[in-house]
Image (cartoon, rainbow, N blue to C red; front, side, top):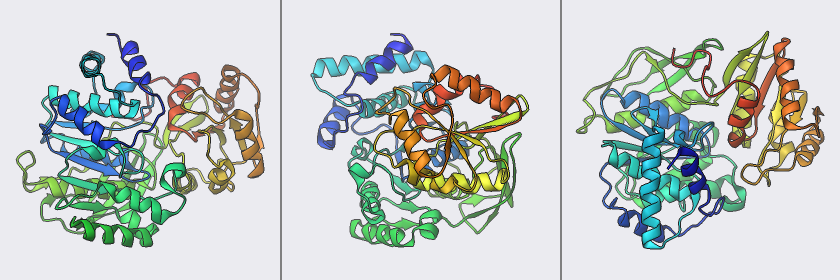
Length: 442
């Protein structure tokens, strides 16, 4: 099986469908020989920040334990969803695991969705690679997500915001209830400081539900306060205050991920590491390094292009766009970037773009044939309704990207946002490729 065949097979499994039957999935997990799981699992849920928390935690624990991390969606290659030892699975390993899954599903005559299949692929890959600990990013909601079929030793909730409202409801309280679905009796749950500071009512709901489920609530004891940051190479430094007896820490830590929101993600990752410290795979006390490199793409990711800059950002919901606006204001307050924007159907474009009104004036609408895209005309209409000038509407994609790159090469700033699923395709069309990120892993 070639990697293209593996991806094609996974995408053929009821693409885009959401199936809420966790009992069926548990039977599949057992049939694959993964019950009980041969490794402890940490479930990381929330609206935004899950992948950042997972990869920060991965980087913190990698020197001590063989980590498997399941993060989604991918930016360039589907193998990015299955990380072993801090890196995406190799094409060969990924294909071998997909073949195992395909063979089992054929024998058992059972159907799974694409989202379930990618999780199952990760679990098989972790087992075959001898992973000692798995970090599992929870997808839609929490209560009915495929990951909730797994046993867990720890859970974390990174943020509460509006997204997937068709399935999760339109109120933050209702969304909080769905996210709390990953809590389990006797299993500690870390609630990010960001939830408490930005949505105190939701934090109260989470604490009440934790009490009902007899899940001990853990609040991060270490606070990360941003000191300064640079676009090139991308890095920001935080002061660390507070005390965690199971950790040894420096007074400062520098990370290679930008975004003001990374402070709460870093705090959450440190809290996860602290809860796991002292177990058979993590020493006590655990050393928190003075610098941390997380191999994670598309989170306020800057590139030099000619005389200008292109920034790739995964913000795709209201909470994320507000966080993006704060980060833009901090790093490039007077730049007025050209925004390349596309999203999935069902989104309120005007509402999504509202936080950027003081920072962006021009929008290039995008439609790509990926996962129920919103029509370009509708994206343009929503942008205009929010008061933005729309450029290059109706122009073929390749020509549109050539014009956008030319804008950057001549000293402009370009911001790409709106859909994580679009980032890889747009980055490649802009000539950025899969590698060569300025400062990444340097």
